[in-house]
Image 1 (spheres, rainbow, N blue to C red):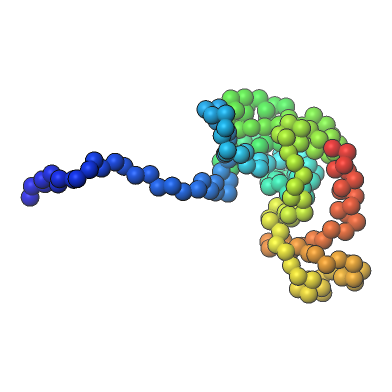
Image 2 (cartoon, rainbow, N blue to C red):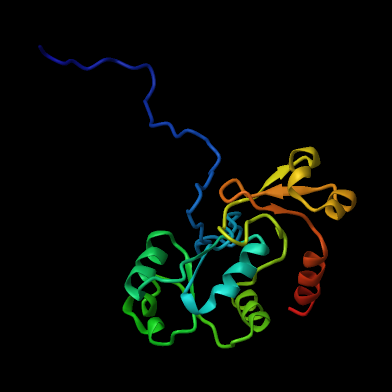
Length: 195
């Protein structure tokens, strides 16, 4: 069977489909230096906290940031997870930050300088230019995204005073914890005001 040439009335050019860019969860979009008018914004960073900054991970979760944390994990596994999931590694371990993958920038890491969690938050927010926009959207225990719940669906699972005073609730789909903006959130806001 022979393949012949088919005449075309005009030149055929490759076509490019026009579609919006929709980054998938876990992808990181970084602005390139090619054009000054680039419209690609940086995505919200995801974190991996070393065992020595567990409280920092809980605070980041409360502020809406994806902050993975394992209380018992070896350094090699920690670095592998940070690289595989494009997470910013948070640690107080100076030796860990001397690893080649961190030194060359393959894994981004922040060496946390202070013991006190408010100072740690201040450092992370300053170094990454973070903003307080999505607080109370993640479970502080298991890091899952919270889902809104109508009061009737959680009424039996919250204290009577909370039922009388609160009208907005969220629930963790994984561990089942119920959240509402009570006095704990007001205390957190006071801490955050000092950042």
